[in-house]
Image (cartoon, rainbow, N blue to C red; front, side, top):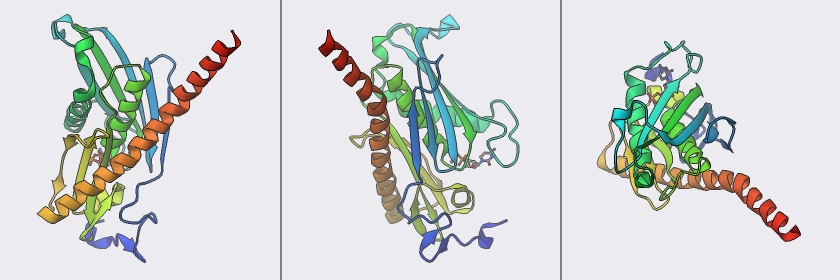
Length: 248
Ligand code: CDP
């Protein structure tokens, strides 16, 4: 199939029925893995991604230790069954790149100076991919870091905007990503400080501004969902702790 075979809009709506500025449905679950210090499962449309955080813990190999801060490691991995054509298992150029940019998206908010000589390990496993897996991974990882009790200056939320049929769209799905004209994933703090920005394809300066604005609005909405998922877990815990205290 090439992009000329695809009609991206029908009756003004996208192939999955969304408006141009609409996110796919999102589901976030906190603390899904018993052995991890923190974890999160996220669905963003057809993406299904799990993040596990371990640490702060001792660094192996020891020569990677930093005396003034913790190091952060981030491993993005796509399961071989997560895509249409079986993906060869193991790391490749794409997963190295995504691991690097995702780590850099999160590192600025992690208070690494609290934990010298240690490591914070973040593992992201993509179980099902439908474009935007790096953004889903970063969203899940940020929640998993909070679930692990890692001190952070703020949450990080991530979302992409793209261009299809000369229209800027929020949160492109696979057909839009693979056959569209541009893809622009970002990650940012709730205050609007951008920690990741990448771009594939071409956008005019006006389109670029429109895409950034749209992706930032998407990231703000995702932040509210990340917050709600954490409150769902820890808000309830707090309430029950208060109840226990009241009974004593
Ligand atoms: O997933 P993300 O958009 O962050 O990264 P991408 O490299 O732009 O990949 C876009 C999409 O292409 C992925 O989410 C998958 O759905 C698909 N893909 C695939 O089918 N097979 C691969 N080996 C890599 C990506």
